Length: 94
Image 1 (cartoon, rainbow, N blue to C red):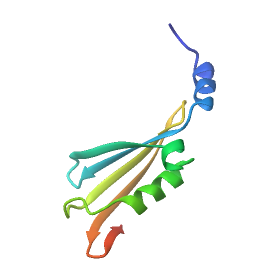
Image 2: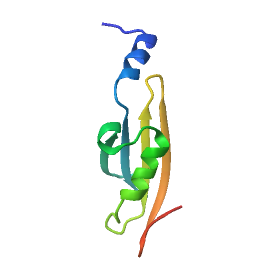
Image 3: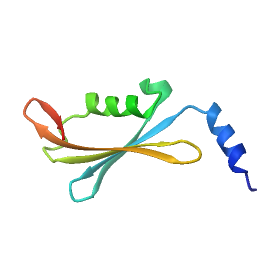
Image 4: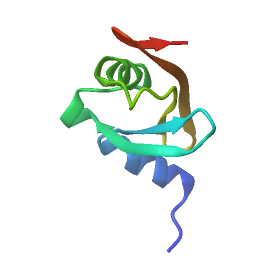
């Protein structure tokens, strides 16, 4: 069954947004992946998802991280890339 791009786009408008968060090592290894949703985490856009990650992220075993926050918009993909270093008093966004 084929769905037209317009129908696919319209079907995504009614569904809650989901943001994918990928935690990667500096050399590109995927360490962890999870999702944020509008209903569970009160994130309604990519900027809010990015802020949630920065506020809730703990030191991941002292390893520098590259974090990718993605949103599937129905007709494309939006992403934010963050490079973080663990600091003594929290996380430093580079």
